Length: 424
Image (cartoon, rainbow, N blue to C red; front, side, top):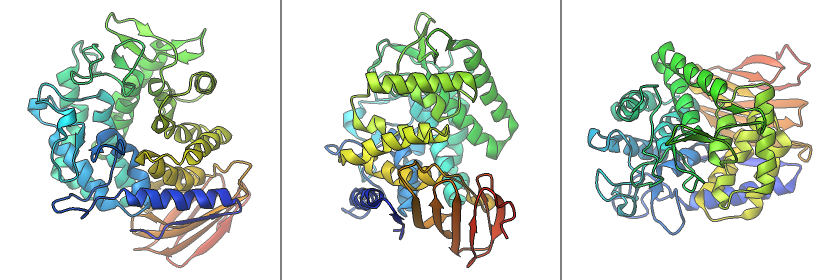
């Protein structure tokens, strides 16, 4: 368990972190009963299970809280469940002892499966390699095989029209397979924008280990999406393609906000208009479930709409909801989100780029773990960043916004600002 702590001039932030840390750690199930895997609760509080979608989204918060063993065990368990008999779909949920959750599985031909989860597991697991630098995330045979199968064998098995993108049957039945994480779309889809966005993200993640052919495939998906899925009148990208091959435009919850969250919509005027579209519809037609909101800070921080990111983070905090995804992602957003942390532990590097809103004068996170490095990071608005490297296996290269790059040795402490190009 980590010693991660958060302090701030805004007591609201400190109280929120204390609540989120305590609540998230209370969901840990490792050794809670004989036979339990290293694991934590990830799904409805009424269901003692861990679900693939929830584990994917709780993983960064779990890492920050020192739950690396739990993350690794659960991701590997999902990877092992993707078999030829299941046409390379991973199972949807397990009990803490590793047993299949019968609620969501009635046999290899009839179980809950959603295309985005296939790619989400690859994208988020390789993201854990960025945070930890632990080579098990890329060398473990089950995980290594899963990453390639997710972007190769799975796609081949479900790509009925040969365009390099898997399709769902278009029935809307989650036990047959759906194209989207939105389980209640207005119209069943064969291809959904959130599935495309995660496919794109997974290919780019795999490319870092296996070469540019995967990055090229990601580029093809993005190029086709940008060319064909835009509607200028509404200022939005399509939420998906229906069974009749018609593109379906309109507000799609996950099918809408996953697109900018994962970079599929790129940058520029269209992306900004689409973010406006999302913000407008969040006001007029917000999601009905609190866990859906847990993605929104990540969406807006990525595109420097920091006040919007903070607004939805406050919504999560104020809910004090018991759904596990809320507490885990509040930890993530308060630390990695507000400080703008992008780790690459394997390359001994970290990028910091403040997303503090006007309401927060300063925020400090102590004992942030990037690989085996232990850091303290203080951010004062957009002006000044202080980094202390408490310890680690060697030097760590840190890039701070526009202020430049510095290589810190264990024991170093530096204070920089955007005007400070030389960080020595």
